[in-house]
Image (tube, rainbow, N blue to C red):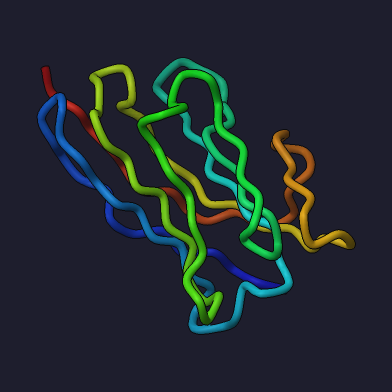
Length: 127
């Protein structure tokens, strides 16, 4: 069992960048496929990015494709979401999620496919 913990959120102007991090209290994330979701006020939680257990495969929502990049560090203790060219519509609470995976290259895009969730970190983009 793993408890994801997000960090790196904050307030940024439109066009700026932020990097979110997700750890699991120092435990390795080597055995977990990971994803980022976000939820804006009054809206459902939506998929942002996913990365496979191996870190070799990623998938992105169309709304962030080309602007956001997810990666795992070599020790596989941290997952990152690099967010560039931020827009006001990116404002939301961002959640890190984890699940075990049989296949090292699989990515999972739906909220129900994840078992472990962080508490979220607020990202606010001002216009």
